[in-house]
Length: 75
Image 1 (cartoon, one colour):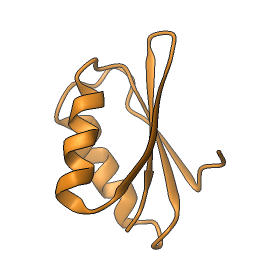
Image 2 (image 1 turned 90 degrees about the horizontal axis):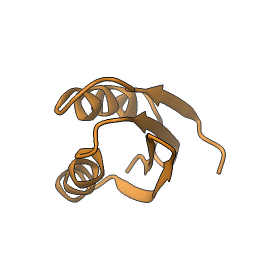
Image 3 (image 1 turned 60 degrees about the vertical axis):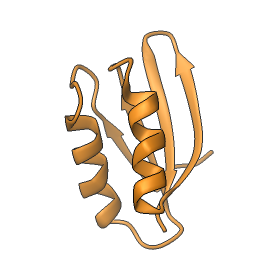
């Protein structure tokens, strides 16, 4: 997947990855893709809830070593 914007929140704990992602999504146009890199283990659950509550699409979540990658499409 090709991200329109990438956000590295490594080392940050909840709720900072979500807050930074919310701000980054606001800078994108509808349909554009945001890639969020996180290290907080609870971020997977947090981004699922965030997508449900905001209407943004959680396209995919993957793990790469100690990094968790979340792909969000702006509504």
